[in-house]
Every structure is written in structure tokens, then in C-alpha cells.
Length: 336
Image 1 (cartoon, helix red, strand yellow):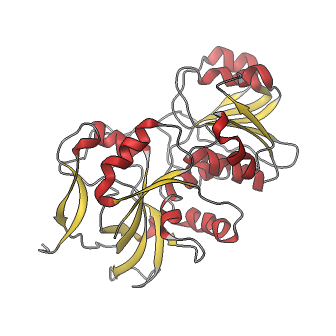
Image 2 (cartoon, rainbow, N blue to C red; image 1 turned 60 degrees about the horizontal axis):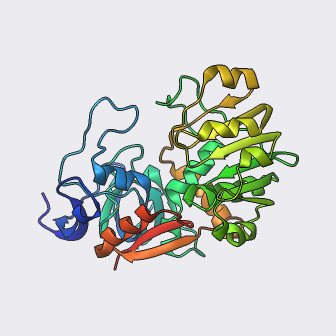
């Protein structure tokens, strides 16, 4: 076992942001199929604060495999520092980014180094810095797997049928609820890239930001209810979820679909009566899909917005920022 150490954020107990401890941790070593990445930046995502708060079992898992102390974090961008003997897709010195080991709580991204499955990584776009690259993987792959292609045949823990994205193109109208957030602002751009007309729903402070990203119409949910204003929508992507998510069903045309990114309450009889579909997916790590996303990022077709950055040692402040909500884009930790 290695005696080398690194700095990392670890959880020795569950609780509020104050339990995020910046301390010494064993340096990981890459196992078969893995590379060691020197982390330059790590994205902050909801599963990080779910784990911190005490959730240790992923949807679909029967029991927890989390053992304290644990390093949270799934999204990283950095440089390959070592490569396992069986890996030929990356070399020392390659700049990479990825969503690690998801769905699980074993990404361990809040650290100076991480042992990462090579299959979860893609080459970082040359024109993208590590901060923006670290903000892309989970949010980007969620938007991609909901809207473009699931990319896998793993059964969903949320429904019996596999998730099928809706064909997007000219003449298609998509409503994105929570459009200013991590998944929302990337989904908006992916839908626009396919030629769809996009209606963005967010608070009024985000209107200029979302119109700049390409939103054709904007609805300030603090002033109006989207279900009262728009109808005959082809697709609703709801990144907010919650008990009131079903209100968006009334905005859909017959044959339309609603994709809840987070669980919502839906009445099967109402869904059938309206002639619409409700479908969800569980995002999974995919270096191959991330490579496709990287091409769009490098071309400037889509871009990652950064809400705020914090040093790794200040992960508590990053989680406190997340708890305040109304996030525009992504929160990212920088690793010196």
C-alpha cells in the first residue's frame, strides 16, 4: 500500500457543509483499466451534497457500499499522471475530463489526485480551461442522455421501460424548466443545436443570460405560471421536479413527452387521458458520449456557464453557495 498522501476533502460523518473536512488522504493508485489524474478542478453536483447529508445508496442499489471516511465528487478535469499497464487510450500528460463511476458515490473527485476509469474519461477540449471542463460532465451527460441518446441499455431504477429521447428538429418546441441551472442551460443549447424552438423557464434575473444562450421565449416563473401561457409543446424537460411537476403535462400536445430529471408525482390515468408520455433516465458515466460533447464545447456550439469557483479547501463555502439556490450554471472547485 502506498505511503504517499495528498490533500482531499473527506467526510468523516454526515451532516451540513461544516462536515466537509480538508485533510490528508492516501494517494490512490490506478488499478486495471484506470489512470491516475492530477485534478485541476472538480465540479460540484447534487449527489455530492446528498452524500454529505447522509444518502449513501443510489437509486437501484439494494445496499450501501459507502464507508467513511469518503471523498465526495464525481466531475473532474485534470492531467494524466500515471497509466495502468492495460490502458492504451491515454498517456501521461494528456488533459482529460470526466464523470467518474456514476451512478455511485465512489467518484472521489474532491482531491488532488484521483484514480479514474479510462472509459469514463475524454480528452479535454483544447480551447476549454479546466474550470469550465470540470463543470461539464454530469450536467452535460444528463442533458445528452435525456435529449440526444441514452447510450446504454442498463435498466432504469425509475421505470420499467427504457428511456427514449424525443426526436428534436425544426418545428419542435421544447420547454426547459430550471433552464439557468447546470443541466438546464446545457439542455437548452443542445435542443437549439438540433434546431428546436426553446422556451426557458427561470427567475427573471436569468432572462438576459438565457436569451444569450439562444432561448426563443422566456417565462419568469415568479410572475407567471408556464401552464397558463404555453400549450402544444412537444417536450418538457423539467430539471426541478418535486410535487408540482405534473402541472407541465397541461402544456403538452397529444403525443408529447415530459422528461423529469428529478422525481415528480404523476397520475397514470391523467397521463393516459392526455395522450402523453412521462419518461426518466439515470445518467451514467460515458467517455464516448463526453467525447461527442467535447467536440461541441471545443467548437463553441455549446458553452458551460460558471456560477462561482472556490478553492478545494473551501468546499464548505461551495456547498453553502449551492444551498442558497438560484445557481446560474455550475459551481466548481479549483485544485492548486
